[in-house]
Length: 130
Image 1: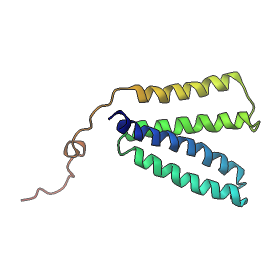
Image 2 (image 1 turned 135 degrees about the vertical axis):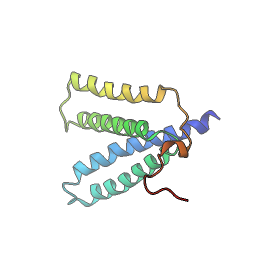
Image 3 (image 1 turned 180 degrees about the vertical axis):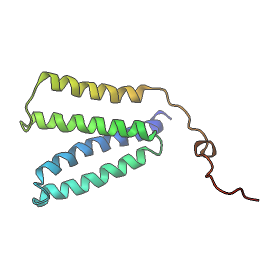
Image 4 (image 1 turned 180 degrees about the horizontal axis):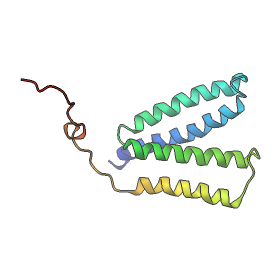
């Protein structure tokens, strides 16, 4: 049972990692003029979006998107600093750690059941039906 509930979160985490890969490949593609980084970008962007789409079937969209963007951005900046593309600084690392901590905090919040579809969307305005 626990594993079944963890699968969407694992898919979301994998999608966030792929987001960092496609963002890095995008930078390396030199405006889509280099074939290999361009191909890596296309494949990983598609897989990352697919994973995000799968995850939001079980995880609220706002939470999933915030985690996806936060983890992806943190990994992208971390990789850039590790490879020397971006300068390392302690304040930058602390702020990135804050992003990761906030994303983890969203996961730790208790789940709230969604209201039935009929209660979520108001009825469209218009002439009354008979």
